Length: 186
Image 1 (cartoon, rainbow, N blue to C red):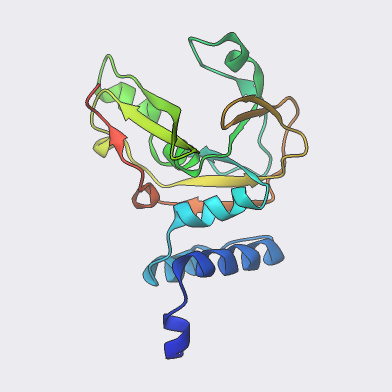
Image 2 (tube, rainbow, N blue to C red):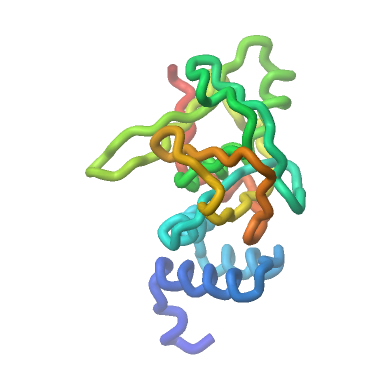
């Protein structure tokens, strides 16, 4: 790499990497490892996908097609509908991909975790929380990049599709990629 390439701002590098992924239709773990080694932020990369009009879905399971499932929001009936859920907030997709709800609930009999949104400086941001430490519930996972075509907005940053969705690309992620803090002081 030339000295000029070392000076490429991270945002530009994320955008360049995103375009390479879209052109190839796949992202390899070795490419992601090199990207991380150069200081690349997966959250910034995912944000670039959203800026380009895509949505995100985080999961601990690798699949080729996302199938509709029943939502689990206990406060909002609309968010219990059966569908493929997606978000425009990278932190939420990373949280869903890298924090095992099953593992959290096996460690603690009464644990609550999840996310909300807030506006800061005119921007919608994710607010992540857990009533217990998530340290022992972290895992590697996957963030699926999805076309918005079949999705309907149901809340700020949250979308649903009623039919199965084939991802544009699947990005393998690690718990270290979740840079948004998880509030445990509820």
